[in-house]
Image (cartoon, rainbow over all chains, first blue to last red; front, side, top):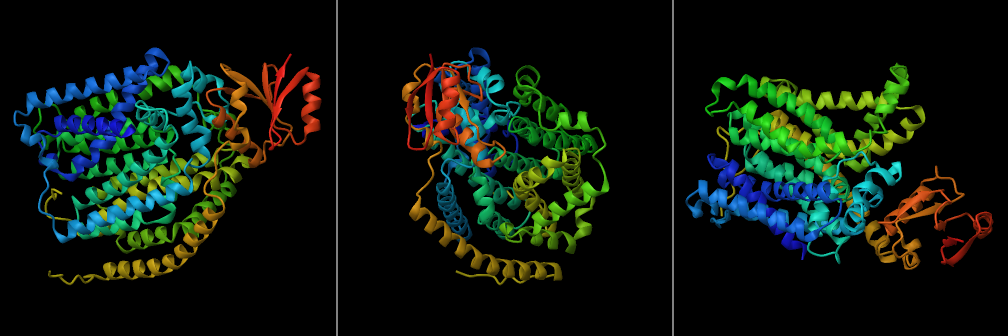
Length: 455
Length: 141
């Protein structure tokens, strides 16, 4: 029954994106279809959040009704702006497939089977899944005052300050039936993992040869630790997904100023802020590089509103749930902010820095990563100057900035936590950065297409 | 069907292909062992049911919103912290109040039955049930 919820979300995302993409040639692309399910799920989660804000209880009929009403609204808007219904349904047309296309389909079929197998090894996910994300989902579904319980009454170990995008997605998918309550997160994590691989392929094939794009997808998709981490049912996979989509948007905007992509970028960064606290940091850094780049291109834009204004407006609207959650609902963060205020800058010394770098280096060569980081390092070193060129420098700086922030956070944590915290958190940081870094490295490393390919 | 020959055209591309081939061969060997290990593990234990130690307790707890969870075990040990997290997950939406004995219903997940009974006597609680994992559900008078 929850498949119906997936379908509604897909259509909601599809028709919402059709409104945004109506004037661009990416309208018919595979990227549009890939984005539809993710955007749709996030929009449905937002609608679900607003129901909880108003009533502080789970009303399945209200959530479903709101989603159906929204779907009807976007379909009507589409029909009003796109008079030809055939244009709306173009991406669903089956074109003649080449041998390469069949290879891609085979690869993704194998990936789906692989992720199902890996997810079934831990069908309830790992620690944070049942201790935090899925537990919050249960409270949202079953409690008489779920927001009060999640934000105030539960133990601090459950991180009540963490945003709720993943639990809300699973709550929405449970709206049609409670009998599969714990099966829904299992399917969601597989869907998000496959989507990540899909975005790697569709995003890269816009810029480089499809063969290289498929190679990057296979390297990422068949990576055992990536598959295991992605199916842990954590929100980290959402971070990985949105950062990857943001990079695709950035490079698209880099080639040509496009109002539709500016809106998509703002929307995506807004979703990112509601995924996890790290998402807020990512969104802040990415917003800076987006704004700088859009400002530099402002004279080339043909739209009525400058692209950077469209980006900012969409970002603010998409961040609304996060702003409401953080300002009015969630307690203050208990992990990082108290450490900075208590320890000040006393903990910043060379010894601690050496320990942190030691952990960073050991994680890169750890056997669980199957030397993928060594491969990435080889690619970076052999073409180092290309990573520092004008168009790619911003993204390189973005990754470096994020690592500096991570190092700073580790520096100001207390000693006992450092020895436990780094080995626990660092693999997850590497995991959610891997798709974006791999994308960036392949983008820079291989020769680019003369024009953006329509997949 | 024609396949155009693809050769690495530059030294960096050649190095990449070489590194990729070496890594793929190395990882394939390791992966095979890993898959065999997972397969053998799954033969013994299909998958862990999270919170199985607390299965059946919800029968005593109709319309209960809050309850206590008492343990004398060291919570710095991940095993004990995991047990508490499992209990909270299994019994959601009941909120477990850690080491608070001021609730009507309390779970005792102690190191021994003796410790549990000692605490129950202090607060004049009676045991409603005990399962094979040593988990006691008690009610204050």
